[in-house]
Length: 226
Image 1: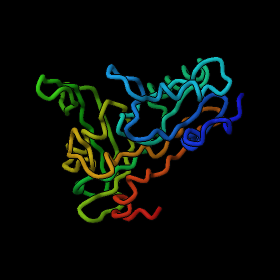
Image 2: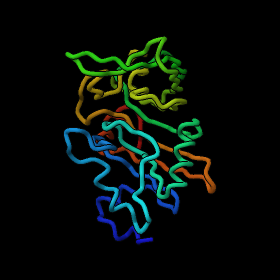
Image 3: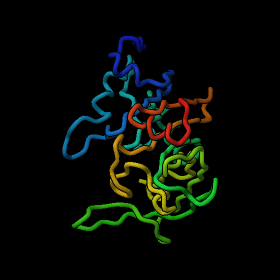
Image 4: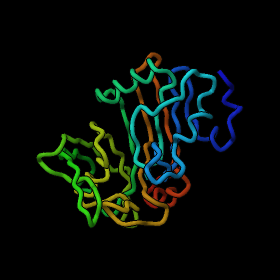
């Protein structure tokens, strides 16, 4: 295996964990995981550098929205990727998110159990909505801090639907700060961080992503001391 120290500093700083079967990246907000029809930079441009002597390019084992920052797991071999895909599909991954939201949810903790479906119009494009005919979606939340009409939440999704956290929080009446689709834009972008990931592999895999600089002022206003 090539030495990770051979990576450019900008990319090495994004490696949260590396081991023979997997690596965990701190994905920046604004970087899509897959190249879209309009082109532009995506995580796919990084994969050749992250191959690091393996036979195949590493591949993402799950999804993160383009505007979401934080922990993204990639499989480094075909067997490892298959095992990771099975864990995420079978809800064997323990995912922790942090968010700063506008306003405050009802109470100190709770669970949103609201199915989601995709809707699309010519005027507004596509988005997700809560609907009884949608796919099951479940999110546990708890308050970590409050301040200045904002709330810092810890989120633990039991399912991984598209835009799940964004729609569930907007449905609670507290959209994520900076969410351009289900709330409104704000300085620092969308304040949603895939803070931690834990997988029951052998040996177990665990990683934690730092709060990005653009999000730190809002988290500090809610009591975060990092």
